[in-house]
Length: 364
Ligand SMILES: [Zn+2]
Image 1 (tube, rainbow, N blue to C red):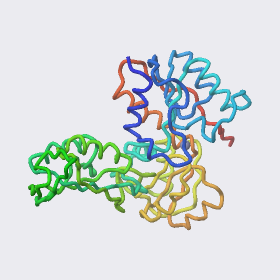
Image 2 (cartoon, protein in one colour):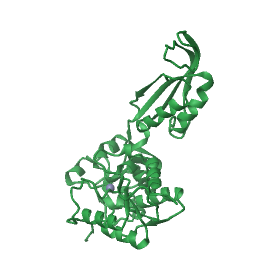
Image 3 (cartoon, protein in one colour):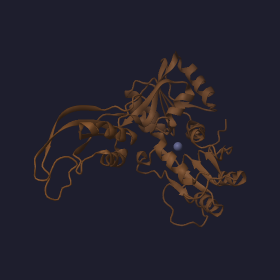
């Protein structure tokens, strides 16, 4: 039987919490990690109605994209929907796990999933993180393989579609152990010369602790010589937004129709634009801040949500700027979470919430 912590740990592997934005609160919000999972309900937003749905289904874990506790709670008296939702969840022993901007920044993540629903090809991160580090270490040659295996197992050496990437060059290492040393090779007070490999691997910064601990546990030396450097390279694996190409160019009108039908939209707010649409950038949720990145990527259209009046002007007629609604841009995240969780867990029921949590209705 899986525990709530097993689901939390798995989701942390998929969407590392270290990637979340500073304002975010993507974590286990209610519930005890040791409790067994009786059933799991997936939702975009966790509202009282969703907690009721979980109770009726016998599901004691809700996995939500938006954290219902966001700005901090100082009391729980039921004076607003956040407090009432939390009170109800705790009273009925329902755990709530939020996977938010950390899920926005991975592949497959929120925006990549949205890009897939639109049918884009060659999907890549629109605004890559610059969170890469490089480890350089020196290993006696006969131990290089075991140290590299350990570093790769901890997540080092992944570049795009390639894993186990590393570089090595062989040279000489020198050292002299002192009285207190317990050297793996050599003797106290005697200068030693060893044939060593200088090995280099890269990894995202959030794996640094795991990588250094893997290095120390696999390396034969008492004192491991290494250095870690922050890189300025873009990390194509982590970042906000996505960009890709339509299989065939479309007119603006055809693209808007395509967008409407592929995402089941009742309404699209957009800037006037008369060019052809081939390259499309997207960001699920409030993504106006990526308009510059979309323009820099040469996108013909940028699809996001929560765009304000004056922000539409910033498109400068350079691209088709579309606001499809926050809920509409992210509702597919439920399917993404279902795909991710159903791949890993088969010993409890997974449910997709049927509650339409969108607080906005359109009258036209
Ligand atoms: Zn959102």
